[in-house]
Length: 393
Image (tube, rainbow, N blue to C red; front, side, top):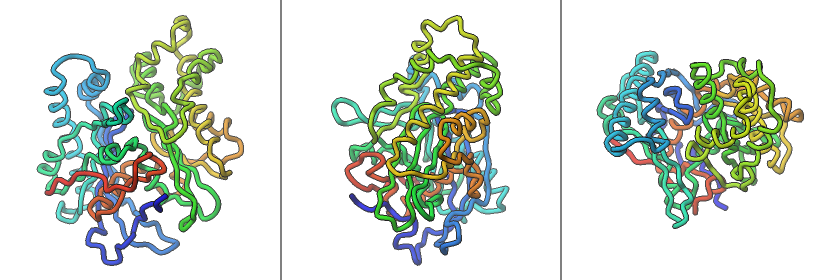
């Protein structure tokens, strides 16, 4: 198995060390997170990536509804609508870039590149003919034009072309910033979908692994929006007001994806509102807050079960993504994993809403240096690949 790509391999005088921007709009569709990060070779006590600015922008209601409709195949004239949605999202990305530049008092010429994820509307890496695809809506050329900065986008497709899942891509970054000094380290990213990374000390012969656990906030947020009008369950308070329905939880946990061995990835193509509606047959009289409590328990259980698949014991589980801000969900995780200390990545100096955006800044840097961004042991790709297409400023 090839060794994982190292963050600073062959970069003693790398022309692309310096400042990068990472932009992420995830499955939750709540908005765009952006970071301006500085990368530099670091000593053993230093963090190799330093986030110097963070900005976010809420997803406009109309754009969120359109992206959800495109993801769920609702409506007609999808190609035209998708192109317009990509333009609108690129404009939102450009706003976040401008805010980052303003807050850090930096000029576009000082930024080497933007790593822009785009919005996933289809993720089908394992079709029967062996030639799957993944589709993230964005207009990288428009973003480069508006920002005046080189853009690296479409970072998942090359891994899929090499037989991989195209996801998760964050374990390689997690290894760089959260690698344990001893033993095994675990990082759980709870966005719309949850994924876990299994890390090892720098220089260890063990292979970094990771996979998607199942739903993160996607179902929790959708149910909350439907019944309260709020985009998410703040601090898990609504879930805490309900009671878990054991029969419903057991049914949810029978989803075949949860039993599949890695490498594996998923998204709204599977865990969508229609899937949830099918699961709720027979529970139509259940109180909405009890369903919310059960969905929160479902996410926690799916994540905990994934963590238990790790062959080596660990002491700490670091959690990032929006799920790290849900006190009820964090408590449910701790209850199911008493052998671990469940902590936010903020305890390690990187706030949970900044981690994934920082990962895409790192992926842009890897691409600009001609270095791999994927881990074949994680995605199942035939080998390490340079990820992303470059749109010059």
